Image 1 (cartoon, rainbow, N blue to C red):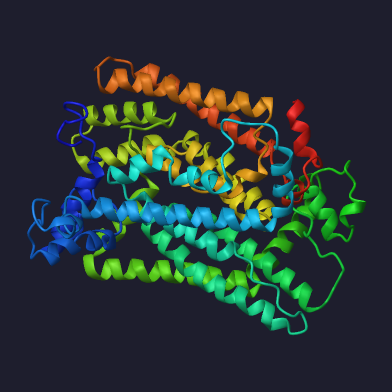
Image 2: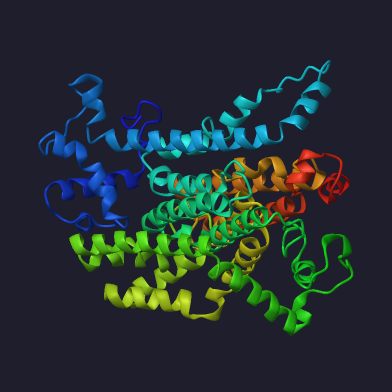
Length: 514
């Protein structure tokens, strides 16, 4: 397809793949991967992609000879094949996790299938096919990995592996021996921390999941300790995330879920309650062994990888591979509503500033120093805090999905690869979202319209050369609002695990009439 067989003049391979292969060639010849301009990834990715050059004696193996093995170890295809394999592994992890959750609530699934007898449906797929369709046959990740994007390898695989390690509950052992139940959690906390640290080093953004993983491991350890003590007394916070902060506060004060006062106010109207709630979560996060082990191993592995990168390739590895992503601004192929402001700021600095260093400083000052530049952080921080402490202990995958969705929607840079960040998490919690509501249909419809509008506007700008910058910006605003509406609809339509196992109960079902 790169030779114009599909569309004349259109290249299928992503430009980032050229950056990867060029950096790999530098590494194979003993140079720094950052000698390749715009390479801003971990140096170990370039070292991995340099393997074909070393096997072929620093020459391109090509695809003209050697059969299948020659294609596999050619610089032209090796990276794409590697990324596709990682994408398939991500799909297998998703299928396994969905199958495990389906088996755990298999009783109700059988009842639903029996209720469908006598009603022939055109799209009545088997559960196995539905699991595969979520990711393995999803055209977006297929397109991204086959074009040569490394997201599946450097981002999605570490994230899903961490979720799999953290979310797989061990078989309940005899509660008479306490540490038989605690020890597997400690081992999983260490393993998950190592994989999480690799993900942070590779892409940085998974650092937002740290508190969620810590809260989840702390909650798991608490439940194991309760089993070990053979205690039937309800412990604080053992009621699920649907009980908001005010209700969680009442649980902490000793009132069980059956005695909750629905008319109580949120704790921010009572400063002492905020302090008690904060002290409780500080104790849970930083004075629980499993959460501490996860934190230590996460930042320990990320720190070791960063040290090795700097040791072999100098300060440039830290600046380009890590620190650059804190201040990245890019107006090209950017779905974010901020792209037009970035575009105007870049144009002003190019006209008024000659020095490239001064240009970057002026642009960064215009975009980041202003108080307006920090406004998008407010909803991100609120959603991150609530989902990390209020949702993650009880539903880890749903918390991570909400965090990622909000992080991408409010980010200053959004590319097509970013959508896979939360799409890989959606299959793990989709069964707990009520999709059959008028509000959800309307939200998804607005999202589809916004995407089509943005693509058409971008086509006139990029391909036809029209001066349609403001039209693309308006489409970006519509896309942002559509994402916010979809996230609110998902939160409104959330059902807890108990509600999924017992359809017809719970507040989420009422949303069908909304």
